[in-house]
Length: 94
Image (cartoon, rainbow, N blue to C red; front, side):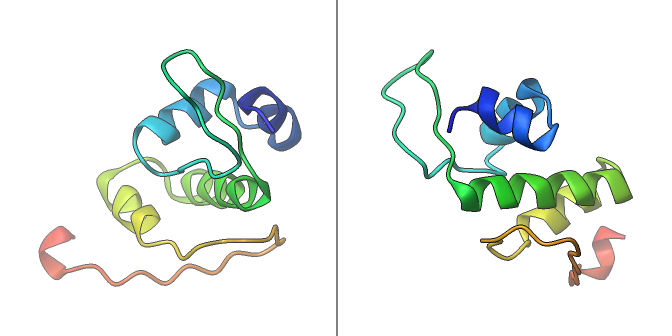
């Protein structure tokens, strides 16, 4: 599905999805983009990860520690109503 379809399905704005793709937080696996301006295609695992990212950001904000935590998120392959995240951070990051 395209980012527009994912946005409608999840409620996450298209601009946010594009930002997370550009930051490498989500790597669409649903298809191939051949160049700038070509649509990205997302699969169900991508949708689950986007929902998990949105939940973490809603709960904890958008700071550096959150970015570190998100990078350590396991691969989320299905949508669930609960996400438990345990992150080990070096003490110098706090």
